[in-house]
Image (tube, rainbow, N blue to C red; front, top):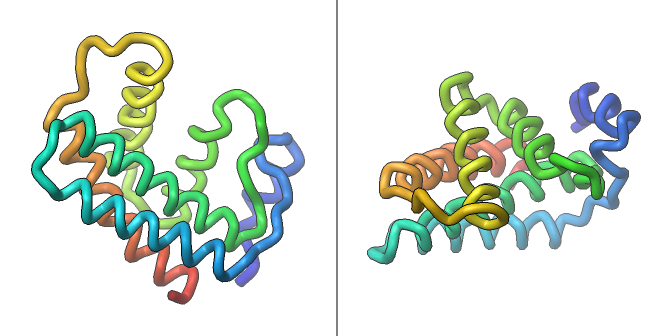
Length: 144
């Protein structure tokens, strides 16, 4: 399947780099996302569930990017750009795109700048729900 034309624009601006698509690698990204989604349902602290859901979501993003033969470049906001692009490809509605963007900002804040306020149960639940929506849609897109 040809990639959406927006990817070519992101390649030209340096937000993405060309990559080789490998079926085994894509399958592993999706298995990791499945594992993270399952683990994020278990009883554990909200921050742990949040980070499991985040890494699962980003594994979905990487699977789709590799399917389209690109990867994030090493530029500022490379993850945010990749997440937004793939979320649009997977038909997340605008309210969920907004929530996903906010949750990515939460992840960056608690990881790189300030752990307070802490991650909430609502944040963990919202990110897990987005992962659970993105994962089957990505599998359908990729043909798994």
